Length: 576
Image 1 (cartoon, helix red, strand yellow):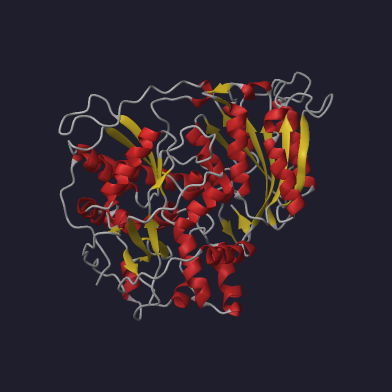
Image 2: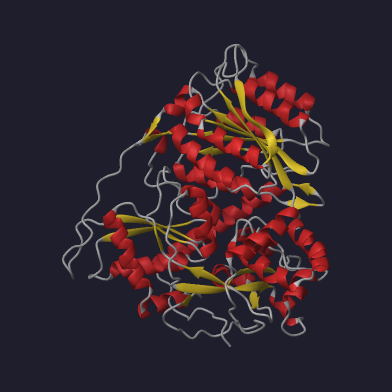
């Protein structure tokens, strides 16, 4: 028996605060997920997750405050540190509790370097956008849970991160209600799990490791005919995140589907919610593993050295013991862990899916999902040139948008506009840089990519917001695609100041008159910086099946754009 459960140990105030923080995040995530499901059309650029590190000490990126200088890395061995060098780590959410504990233990050693590791959980898509070379608050080290994400980050963010040997693993398991697991007739096969009348519910394989590994493991077990039936069914019920799956189970265990997760996530859930414990079920064919590696992305040589010193510690027996307490298996030091009561099947870790397999199954999944038809509209008024540290608002937005848009599925329809007063000529506040078209058309994708790079060249003038929103809505309606989620995404750093344009009341009246319940169009508004008219933006979005989202910091911008790509739920053909 090899399925682990964490060894019993006392819980101190540090870990208690860690667990309470994670529990609070999960509770908020569940609340937000429930509110999403009450809307008919999802916000295409949706939820600002509170996971990981909302802001650092009130640092306002829009105002460009400088960071304080850091201390020297090392002090006298065995002596206390008068100052500590802050080293930022972005970590896969499945490993975040363990890495927090590891950092605390490492820093407590009097012979360790004078470093303060700041650990923040990040989803793969958040990391992909946030690791862009011009993005503020980039980490010094990154711990993804699959080499596949490193490949994607290198391709999209152009950072040439070096793949590292995994220091730990956590097998993919199926989280199942204990009573349902008791009813199983032996250890199930992948086909039974995904092809039954009540299949497992997956998280999106385009944005979560659990979904990616599940699809890459299950799809090869299906015939072409089986795949044509199974994949659309799985895609129709897919969740946007692991937390959404756990929240659904906690709300109504008897009705919730089983779902694939990292073994570490299951153990963490059971620790946080002892009244809603689940058990692990392992497919008889075996299962791949989440593989945690430390990627050094520091640009400061002192911080890069600190990351390398942490890498050495992560391979030690002491680190292996801490990892085991959180249900994560060290890759260098074997640790025996017992199987939780009620689990079905021994964990048999199989090979990691290669890049070609992941790409192939993701393409198959994409063909079975509801696609987007998006019109992205970017504010290029003069205030977008305001300084943000050594950069500007528009430069940061331009890079983040480029990375985000490059991650959209090729079957997405996408158009791109910019706006400021009279940007398109006298009396027209918007200008089309790329029409709405499919990204699998190479010429259109190139046109969109070029358009994104020109945002900074278009900056100037006031904020002609309301006329632009109304024009964008009319364009989206004229090109409505009933097979897709149709949405307009507005990013602005200000408020309407066009004296010759329509008023807010006129815009709302226009939208009410033009709205067609059979052709719903979401208007998602995102406010960047402190000067946005959040009240007005919220009113516009709420009356068009969506919401307003504030991005006052770099971390918020990263999260908003990341969630934008994949955060929607579909039921009976209608995305909500």
